[in-house]
Each structure stands twice: as structure tokens, then as C-alpha cells.
Image 1 (tube, rainbow, N blue to C red):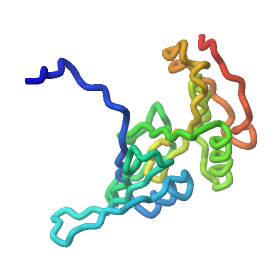
Image 2 (cartoon, helix red, strand yellow):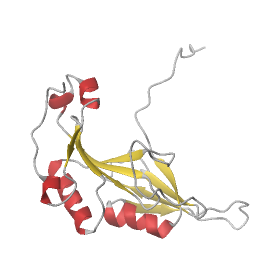
Image 3 (cartoon, rainbow, N blue to C red):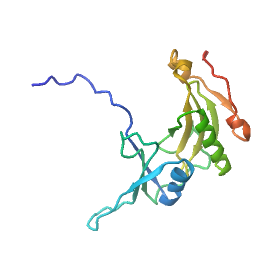
Image 4 (cartoon, rainbow, N blue to C red):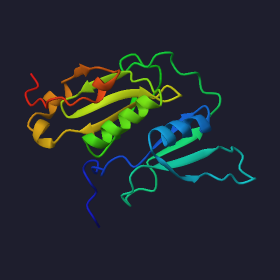
Length: 186
């Protein structure tokens, strides 16, 4: 008989996230047309299902490890989103969702695209381990759009990097300007 584990098994990571949304087409526009996720499936309801739901599934870059990254479930009765999104005073159960872009150049292109589409950038932060902008989806969920800095920059002091925040401009060309990496987070 195999020995039972004494504690939890460490997972590989998060497989996917399911979000309730008021309007599936509006949410599709945000997650697909603005953030670049590809719709990979849709839940087809059976006629005998006592609690039908409308649901769509989306993936980012394909790594063959996951069937989808985000799923959206239409729930028209959700309360309206807060008027202004705030990381520290949010009224949604989910504080924010972080979307990673592969490198600084792809991040800059994505941020410029979002600006061209009129998406409001709530906050831009150099976190010490990432450079991030924060936007929100039509349902009020905060979305962090980021790229990771090289591990050499922050790996020696993860706690210091987690506690570091340098706020940067949120409008105009300055949003995507290069900034120097910080390696001393004091």
C-alpha cells in the first residue's frame, strides 16, 4: 500500500479562469478583439438541461498544455461594474487578472493597440519584476497587462520586488517609453 502524502501536492500552475459576464458579446470583444485571446469553443446546451448557460472558451498562445485559459459565462443579472476601477477598493470578487505578453516589444505593441482603441489605462506600474498597465473589462474586472523583467533583475530579492512599485504615466507616448530596470528595491 502506498504511503499517503503528509501535505498538499504542489500544482504546476493555474489551468484556467472562469468569469461571469453580463453580456457575452461585449466580453468577447474585450477578451478577443482587444486582448487577442482566440475563441476555441462554446458550450452547446442540451434541450433537457434544467439550468442552461451560455459559455465560451478562449486560449492565448498555444502550448498544448491546456485546452483553454479563460472561459466566460453569461450572467445578465450581474450588478453593474464600479464606476472607477481601483486595485485597493474594488467591488468585484476578483481583484484583477494578469495577462502576460512574451517580451517588452510585444507588450508595447499591445499597449499601443489598446490606446488606439480608446481603452482607458487606469494605472501603469514598474513592479520590480514586471512592467504593467491596469485596465478593466466591461464587467469591472481589473486586468493587468504585463511583461516579466529578466529574473536576474528581481530573483535575488523576490520580496523586495513584490513590495516595490513605481507609478508611471498612463497617457500618451510616455506609457510605452523604456524605463531602466531597478535591482535595488529599497
